[in-house]
Length: 143
Image: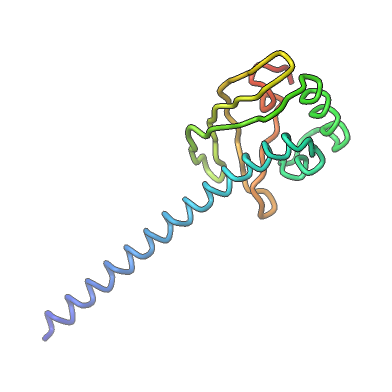
């Protein structure tokens, strides 16, 4: 009888540990998906030429909202970008941030442009936001 109680106790502890581990894994996967969705939302906003809404999905930066909107508008509309698509290659968690590697393809006035790039998405004020860099537009662009 005593062995049975010990066995039930051990099984209960093992099940609790399994439940905790599964919960952590599910939570991490959900956060990873939210970070990925943030990047995809931003690409959608660029395609819609909605740079103001895009600014709201960017982490704190050393640029005014007006400068951000004008810079993105001038670059994306200056090259006549259209139909930007990304394919996420890899997501790595670094502390509370996610480094997302992706392949981007867009059509421009000069033809189709493709490149690989990386961004950091972090949680700021309860939302996932992109850590802005001009390299997001094109990896070789000057800041």
